Length: 280
Image 1 (spheres, rainbow, N blue to C red):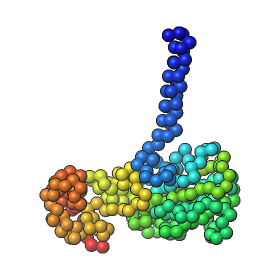
Image 2: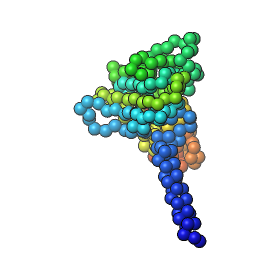
Image 3: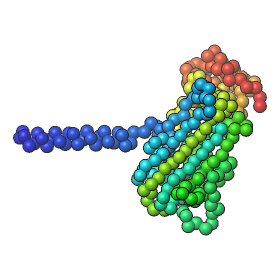
Image 4: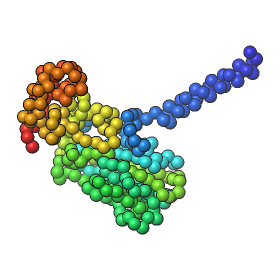
């Protein structure tokens, strides 16, 4: 083999390595693991909160979506968790785009700034986006204020209202300047509400949240209390009756198999006891 051929092959090898590494850094994203939708999650997985903050906790959009040029995703989503004290979603865009958003489902409408048949607004309360599209136009300073709400007078957002907020962005020119500024805050009083959800509404053997399985991988989130075998949002005598019927069942998918290990046994019963709430 000639020296030229060797050099050419070596160059091809390094080029292939560069392409492979570039693909990894461009497309590997832990926040998308298991995401079944085309809507990109713009924040990292949430975690359990610990300690006693002097002010508040906050989860935010990641730097990738927080700022950047030519870095726009036109279908995005954020998860609004139970226990949240307040939420704030602002998109900055300098090219005339608009937003359609909906909580718990894909928006039906399209982001058309020339549509005269919709009511345009900004800074929506979450309630207005639950089951209906919200249409957002620029309010000044290139701001699309999608959501601004607070829940702290009632110990945070109730568990049955936690869900994905879906956002369609477009209708203007290709975006050359684009920011998603998302934040969810937890004040000290609401931390316990959030952690109760995190500790008791997941698929892990101890009842805690598995982010990828329980949240990231779902289109519409439904909070499921560990031990709630009849799916009525409590753990009471009815659930104990269902457990007794299924005791010693060896099916790993059995409804009473709470620790993920067959058969249904005393370990599952201990989880049921721990999660007992009584009838609500």
